[in-house]
Image (cartoon, rainbow, N blue to C red):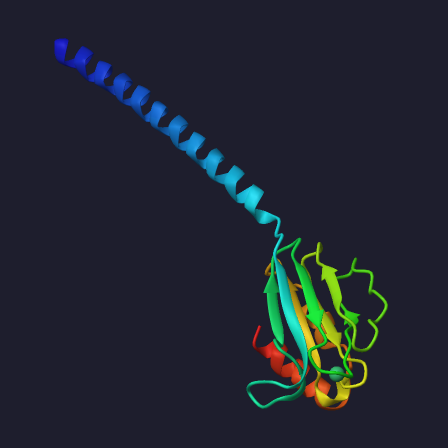
Length: 165
Ligand SMILES: [Cu+2]
């Protein structure tokens, strides 16, 4: 009789302890989520140079072909060499394509919609002066981006870049 009572008692104590454990774990998770939420909105500024020649020998090129950023980050293109610009040609569905930038002018864009963005240098797109911005690790619009026809060396380079994603 005593043994049975003791077993039931330890069972309930066990429940009580595991209950406490869970609630403290939940609290920890909530704290973590709050931290990651406040961290989710990017505020970084990433710089890309417009170049005649890059360190790797590529000519008429942006300093980085593919840039991964967080939602809310800003990308700034600097006209390090002359004769270049930034013209967006494709992006996520709800992205309103901005007018192409002036040649030799700095341009800065903040990205609030996740997805892949394709931009080119208007005079040098067919020479392969193109770039991709990937926002929030979202590559769901890869096929739409792939279907954009740049022409010349730009088309080949787009395929190569997308294969690397
Ligand atoms: Cu150019």
